[in-house]
Length: 307
Image (cartoon, rainbow, N blue to C red; front, side, top):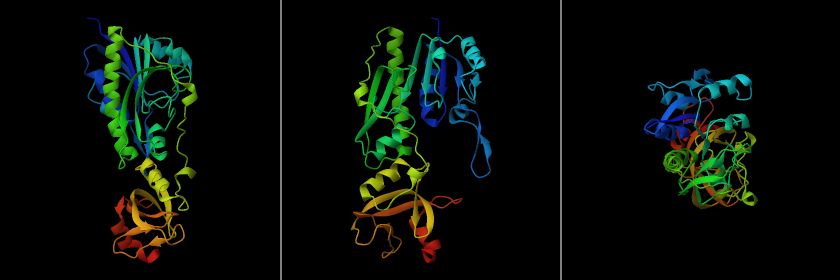
């Protein structure tokens, strides 16, 4: 049996279960992997490899890390791999049309129920919007962003405790499962396509720095959704008195806010609560610039006098 020559493109940890599906399935020969270039990260600006590159360190597979796919050399390299199948999962670069014309099939593993939440931040937007469910869409890639026909879908309920971190981990495995089934259908010639309903399309734009700032004048429910959606990165930022911090974890208190929004409620021992226009938000984990994540108790022990 001739194996299907396959190229994969992905960058963050979300993509790892999907690429492992290809590595451990005998039908596919992984002839190349595309991932984002190594980049400086953290306070020391140490050069860091992508999660996908790290995961493949023990596998002998060619890895390509171009800054762009728009030049002729990038196209020449891709064509030389002679891919029959091209699988993309959170790669981070738009795939040009001339790339898409080379393989027999190009599919994308997207973390939403398309056409809802096309774009860069589908998981964050689903949580922030208060959606009750999300999922994985396997679609055929077209030139327009996340607009291709759907080949397979796997739904998942969004739990009230889910953050972007926990939901990403769940959807990563769901993506691998949905991809495996979709590729089986492609190999067997039984795959079917369903066009997206353009009227229902919503776009999940990238989270901006200004959007990360908590406005305590918003209701507690919306504030809690923002904290969950931005946890742990980039983190919802807020002023606690005069101290700027990232709020990593919080919950809605049973206490009805009786003070102006933004007022700190420090009446109970080791409780850090902030008034909103509805109920208080009780902060559980937070992070100061350049510091490690800490509990509200540790924060109060060290900074209470500055509040």
